[in-house]
Image 1 (cartoon, rainbow, N blue to C red):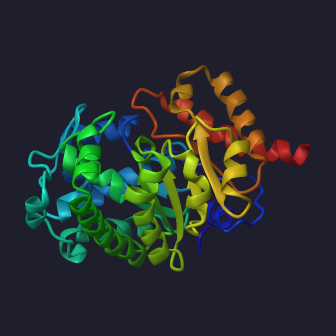
Image 2 (tube, one colour; image 1 turned 180 degrees about the horizontal axis):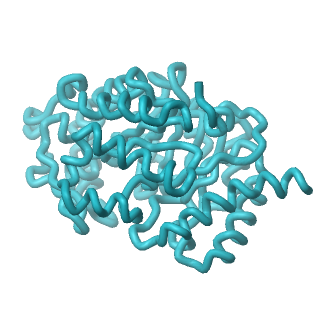
Length: 346
């Protein structure tokens, strides 16, 4: 039994005493305790060692008091499981030295047997659930197929992913075959996470906002829809497609329980587009966490007020920045928690 089920109740649309709060990328780079582990172990070593992944996942629950833990892992474990080499260079980002260029390259990859290639994630989840002991829910996740294609074709990070887009526009059949392979792997992977014990699944489409509304439907949403359809009866699901607010209505129609939004859209407009039957998550600008603490407190109050207190999960509009002081992250979380008392007093 969960002692704190605020997140799950909010995703179901129940009335709650205050919005739940967690932060994307909360397990990691801004915490000194994480940095100490980073000095000792390589990135994938941290991901692939259940004891380390467990320790890192639980750190923000202990240190800043969030209402949910999110599995410490990376979206690029899926291309890795499919047979691609993935390197993660500290402070530089991902490198896939042998990217997909044409249909022949699809012979080098496969729909992964997740129990063979990603069992370390499932082992970590079981351990985390045991260690959390019902304190808060555990969020599992995967990258959306479009976002994974971006890295698999571009071979590295990019602000625009032009090569990935050109690949989709010039070799659409190959692109759709690749997207379907990623989707099939992702469904099996997320089902494995659910079986291991996660309470919620988030699908990260970090680069969804690079596509026009029509292309977002064609190259991204139709695959996310398959994932949500395969999982929504088993587990609560959240879609976070950064920058793709134009498609909130279509995303809500997938039956996902929650939709993440960034700071470039107002809560009122997001609600209008998404409709009343889905929970919204977001949308604090992570850079604002570097403002003085009184400013953070004031801005959090404004955000919560603008979302109206119902069907809202307080979160950032993207991942926390590495240079955010821990007491500022804690001030964000505490400001959400204190909103309850003010709501009651008012």
